[in-house]
Image (tube, rainbow, N blue to C red):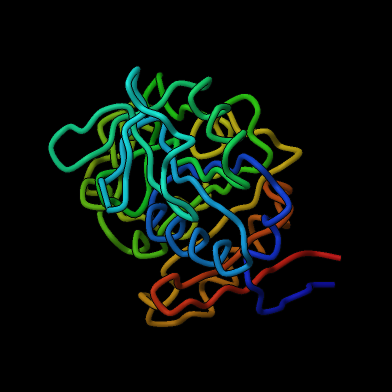
Length: 240
């Protein structure tokens, strides 16, 4: 039996401390959405990264001369340094220190340069070992696109799969990304949720539900959220 319901994803994380986001297809927008939702509940929130994130204000730099206890709350974005328009990654101890000062720390642990889906390099993702929950994100706008246009690090993907860079991302190809070598790499299987984002880009939104059911039925993932962060719409799909 399938269980399908509209949810507010913030309600599932407000009691957690360290929440990590990996994959592609709208991670930053999702993190910002959840951060604002948590603040509305009265929580203080730090947005951090182990890779790089855009330096949206307000932000702070974690360095020798910084004093996080003086940073303005309830919301701050934190990086090690500022490189161009991006904040660089913190080390794990920095993130633990933030957790002592803020109720929740949201961690962007992957990069995809705006692509809807990605294939990780050897050093990716950079998931803190103390993560309480991981959201694995992929953009449904990858469907029907060519690999070279939709997959970040498509060269690695083609090398690993023997697919051509002009191959089409079919539902079957898309589903194959949810495996240990790819989007589930390094993810604690006891505490994660897959988010299929941007269902509003599909000509037939029902395709998103079909994909979610196929992932769950295959035993790959326990729960899938089909979402449009742009429209603040989230639907959880589980199998009872």
